[in-house]
Image (cartoon, rainbow, N blue to C red; front, side, top):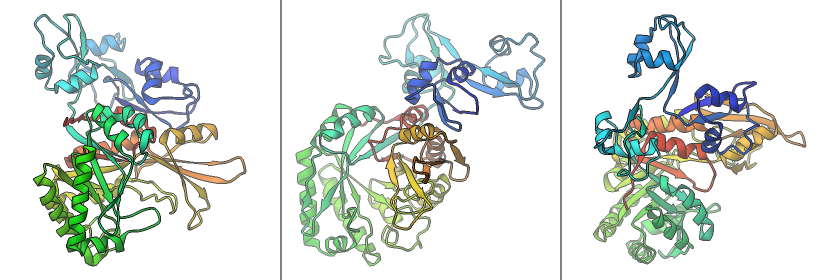
Length: 471
């Protein structure tokens, strides 16, 4: 996949022509509501393994062919070069990905081994559903890169029947699905939620359901509630008993513990509870994970951070989810919601004390719209990245891109003249996060939260990774 940023005056058929990709394919993967209304600065995913290479000083066609594992003849014929020796800096060359013509007695597995890519990657690129059904003469596109395997979790707080179409639409991209969440009561019982439709749909899509418990709500921070639970072995026994009963009844295969705003003095009590939970749940065959606030050092203080002991969670639990989002808080001033520069600071610390194969990078998939000037206590509107693009088009604005946070944003004036600032996610910001997962060698990605349409994310996720399916 390539990413193209719309320039002034560009229209979709011109962009499609330059990449030699059908217009309808670009419309499909980006789910463009109006192909005739692009926004300057809008990032488009271009569905191709081919690339456009800009000739650099001292380049020769031979060097370029070597660089991209192709031949001078293919480059010359593809680009209609009458004189292969005459190329110049700034010239854009179309470089096709390698192709292979299936021969008699070929198998897809043999072809994948020949080119050093996984079978899943080869199948995904060529949209092959049955690896045993390939025929001599079929032309296969050979991927330029293999895709590392990762696990992917998706939290979802749309419950009951509302969860069903959401999970059906993205289930193929998920390893785990976590309905959010069972609220803990003071006596260790759980406030019930209608998660059965979500769990059933998860199993239909080969997704592992992961139970989520929490101590907080939008109106209660939960620190005192957490203290009551963590300081009472009796309440903990009751809580773990209720968790096990719910997991057995509902069909959950693991647990995610999201205790937030834990009092600083309860740090060790929290660690002890995690160890107790792991002991009890492992004995029954369940895995246990936690959600962690985005810390940058062991010494970081604050209600969100002090009691979240990265080293202990990494040692005790099967894996952890880093909540690397919400810098652009809905009640705070406008800014990138999950800036990559801040995420890297968290990851630098996390990998120093937690095994990399236990870390999930948190990735928010929604947009926010703030009124300007910002007034403390004023709440931003939350919606999908698709809605952000729609608003940019409707109000005729230009999308900017902040290179530090690697996040897109724009401003507009509404019908009453009020100024707004919108921060959201696009193909570029998603790719920055996927690159971080690969660079840091993490176990996976955890989305907060399913239900906000963001088609570019899922296309690029599959282009970057092979998604592990555990059932």
